[in-house]
Image (cartoon, rainbow, N blue to C red; front, side, top):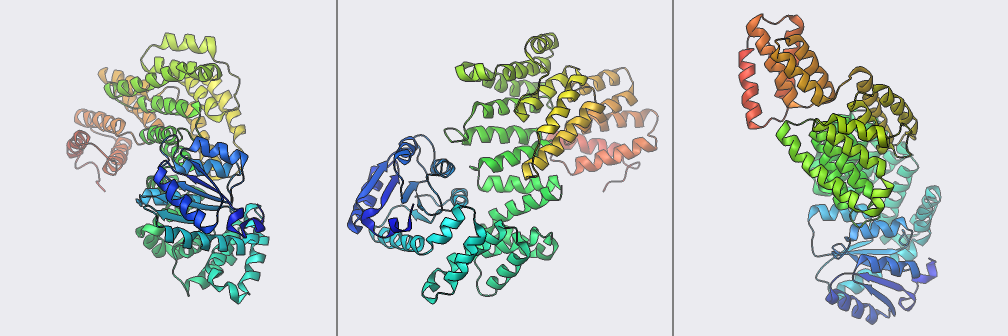
Length: 546
């Protein structure tokens, strides 16, 4: 796209994407009055993408709720990914809904304007004319952004700022300069820049930029009060959660990172990359239910988007198996029924069935093993699963799990070492996955059974009055599932029996204290809470309750 393309309305190519004919009619008639001649309409995302393959559009006006195949968020995401829309394109979102999660999703795609339905012809004319004028005037800055030439963008911004005739664009220019400094990782200079801006104005993007510049310098303590205020305000809350998640991951504080990424995902649920981060942090923090929900969300929101893939269904299946392995028998059976239904659906897709043959066999073997059909699981693995590493990290991790669950520890460890070599880069996802692999290596090396097997062994030891062995098995199960309240309550029950019989020794008292503290800060259901309080009462006098 060239600057002269924006000089007159008659030369503009405009694309309107909406599934309501009245909206097309209103916008078309209004633009025609301005002199726009080349207007194309699309009632669904599929047709919009086909049109963009043939024509370069200067203006894209897109409804957020294009319901017939994919929503506006995923459509625009795909158009940006394929290069059909960039900073020089006039991008306008349409919606009748101003609900917070929708607005957050729109903000993430950084459109030039957000038009709320019903549309007024007068408003359309005024706002489009203004946006075109901004694009034309600041064209060289937008072009530099499109090419990731941020130093050049700052040069153009500073030249424009010297022109008093461009005073009305100064805030647009300041925002792009701040973004450029952050993209160049000039955090000290960015801090000074935003600090000066905040003395004159109080816009939300200035607070976000200022906070980011300090957080990246590890000066978070200096703005703790500001960050709290930003989390309380709707217009800065969402961006603040993202900033804090990045910071906590950098500091390897994965619990706090997980807490804030959950909040950010709730506020803007359509972003696949954030959901992926949510998933990674869920499994790193051993939240198997959170992991299962995250993969389900990713599969659901990616439907018909550029991210859609059978691998997403495969990840739901894998997370479901992991979750089921931590649950009591009846709850486990319920999740496994969902898992088996998803496996059946995946097998029914011809392409997936041929491309993911080994991966599907692995999930089936893991399900058989959970259902205590170990012979069937071993036969499947022996016949269809190789030790050779695959290009996909997730495929290899699942292969490690099936080897470990079937007692093939040497194979699991060899494959895990190969997986470690697959992790490249120091990005946030790389850091989180690297830490997760370290945990898996430790678990495979030190613990030779699954959490389910360890729980079963603990029950058997308990029934034979081998209480110390029962405690050891449960402690290992807790290492694999650190947040599992059921395992913690089992440990406490065994300790109570030992206390009644012989009294607790120093190490056992220490274990009792640790478990009581953990349960006291855990989310327990009503039945678990009653059990916990009863056990705690029985141990009163020999434990210190914090």
